[in-house]
Each structure stands twice: as structure tokens, then as C-alpha cells.
Image 1 (tube, one colour):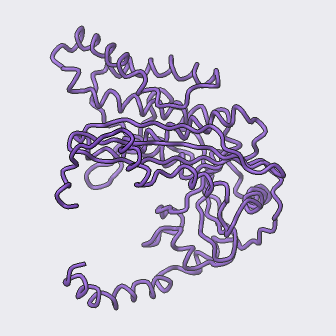
Image 2: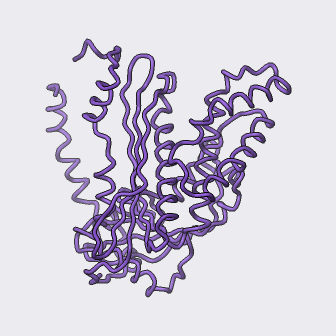
Image 3: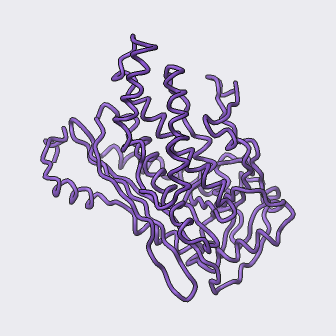
Length: 388
């Protein structure tokens, strides 16, 4: 570390510590306490069948391309029978470094497609599963769906039709390959788009819009999986976020989860919030809403109701954001406490063990990437070789 940073550490220490010391003083404590219902969760013995899904990706950058690896894995926990792995999948491929600005978004979407397909595959094979735990937020994925693709209308129409022709039969049939279907159909998709351009937009070169065509189709593939999951299994789904940054509940200057961290140490849960209008929101340069729009191909996703609340399952354990993709009446405390007691029966230190197990099983470390690169016998320059 450079000498100036040591000096800045000394200079900033007092103000930074003051910020953390005063967080509690700046929170509307009365409002938070009214919104949080303290409740001891006492269920210790798991009597429900749980499953959990997680995914991971990692990448190594060379001068010409990224080599990446992605994985997904479900874990099933059956009372008195222990834990078993199910529906695992992975892929290794390359992406040009021209896509450096969007590489993480690309791989995150690929990973999520594998996660969704692993989830569907497991639920199809094990219909007696009571709860499927997902790390993250389905609604968050939907609200961040990208529509910023300027494709010719006929190309968009073809892709919209193609996704329904392909994905619905695949998912309904079951026992499908857990893969990013867009990758396996790339040549076919681009061939058809090339024919459309040749006939209706000869001035457009397929190579100019190739990335946008594939990203748009990947997005449709992701939506098709979410739509199928909610259509068939929403009653089993619980999404759990441990690092939520939303501030819809308390509207403080820090996230809702942080507000609860600094104000409520005992187990319990907040009031329920319903998100009923899930249309895509588009803003202008001043962050004002200019329009709301439905999702392509699957407009019904806009109308799905999500029930959202925060909980702490054990004293001083992590605050968790819970998202359930159906409507629970705000006065139905019995239903909420049943779900949270069931969750508590699977927890270690206030966090579902099966979800942590799924994470530990699937994570791709830098050492794993080094092993993959060595086995691929790739010894190309990274552009940072002289710094090693």
C-alpha cells in the first residue's frame, strides 16, 4: 500500500467511525419498531422436503478473448435421509474481449438460465418437494430485464416466435438438457436472421447485429424459464436475499436490511409488502418514469404478485429479504410464521444450511479457473504478463 493511503487512513478514521456510530441515531426508530413483529421461531426438527439452487461463474481474460466457466447445482434435503445433489450443469466457452463492458452481464444471464433450468428439472423429478430456495430475487431479475435492442421488427418477430416454438415443448417434455439453448442454436438462429435481412433489410450486415440478436434471444430464453417456473411451481418457491440494497420499506438513507440490522436484534419479521405491477419501467435522464411496458412474448409476467418482507430467524443472525412469488394476505400471520418456522428448522446461525451447501458446492474459484486453463493448454498472453 502506498504511503498516501496510510496518511488518508489516519485522516479519515475519525469521520468514518463517526458515520457508523451515528447510523442508529439517524433512523426513525419508532417507525421501524412498528413495522417489525418480534417472533421466536422454535421449530428445530425439519419435517419438510427442501431443495436449493445456486450458480456460479468465473472467467480469465486473454488479449483476444475471455475463457469462462459457469455452473449450476441443486441440493435436496429429505428428513431422515440427508442431503443429495441433483440437476447439476456447467459449460466452458469463449467470449471476445470486445464484449469486456458487458461480460459480467452476459455470464450472469447464462448462469441464471442454468439455475432456472436446474430448478425446473429438480421440481419435475421430485414433485414432493415442499420448498425450493433460490438465492436472489426473481422479481429483481424481471425488473432488470433489458429491452435496449434496436433490431429490425421482422427479426424481433422471428425471435419472439422461435422462442415459443422451442422452449415450451422442451420444458413441458421434461428430462431436457440443462444448457443455454441459445448457444446450441446460434448457427440456426443467425442463418434465419441472415435470410430475413437479405430479403427485407439488405443494408444491414448480420455481423453488425449478431451480439444483439443473441442477447435478445438469451433474454427470451430466461423469461420463458421464469414464466414456466411461476406457472407450475410458484407455491414452492422462496427467494432469499442476504445482501439486498432496496429501501422500499423504511425510505432511510441506507438499505432496509441495514436499517433492521442496526435496530432489531431479536428474531421476527416485518409487515408484508405486495408488488403487483411488475411491468418494465423506463426512466428519462432525470430519473422520472416515462413509460411502463410489458415483457415480450410473456406479458403475463407483468401481473404476477410478489409478497416481500424481511426477517431475522435467530437473535443477531443475518437479516434476510424474503420474496414469495404469490400473494399472502397481509393479515395472514399464521401462513408467514409457518413458512419461517419451516425455514428455521433448516438453519444454522439463522441461514438455511441447504442454501449455503448449494453455494459451497457450485462456487468456481480462481484456482479452478487456473486448472481449467492449464488443462485446455492455453498459454496465451493476458496483456498484464509483464506485471507478474
